[in-house]
Image (cartoon, rainbow, N blue to C red; front, top):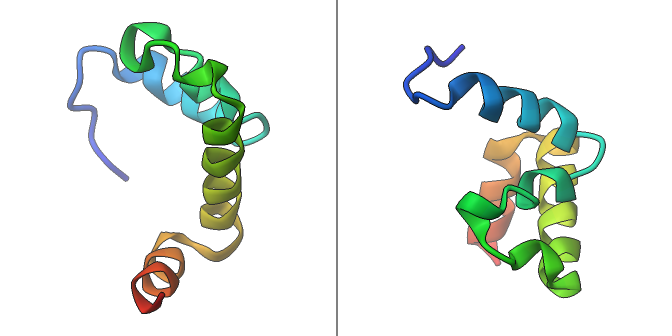
Amino acid sequence: MIEPNDPNWNRLQAQAILARENPKIWLDMAEIYGDLAQDAGLVAQFTAALHAVWARGSRQVLTDYIAG
């Protein structure tokens, strides 16, 4: 477990939990990401990547990415 290290930790953690089911929720934090949540292509890529991390784990997703 990562120890809290950000003044916004509780909010970020809550958003991350919600984003597991709806990744766009993470990008909807406009004060961090601006209007990126309005870019359908970016939302689709982010959604696919986040689902891959949850399904296969970050280590495997990064290994696959590096392998090309």
